[in-house]
Image 1 (cartoon, rainbow, N blue to C red):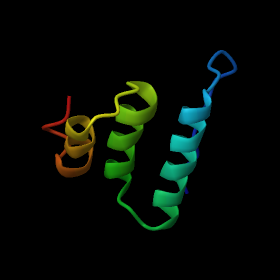
Image 2: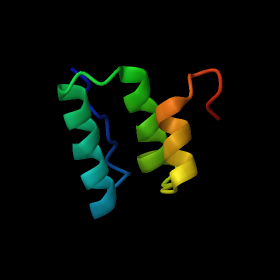
Image 3: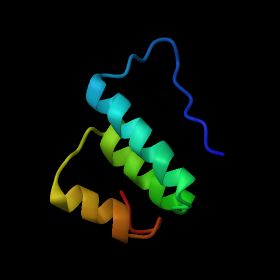
Length: 66
């Protein structure tokens, strides 16, 4: 099972905590790890919330994502 690693120096905001919980639930629902990783990068790491960024996260393969 995928475990999120968070260092002591990084405090998650409430939206980030919600996104992390969402991503954990996706893992429980058997969503492929590569899709979850792209969503995590977009939602948590890059803090991008737009239709275009979500579309790229969901529907691109690893060689196309930036």
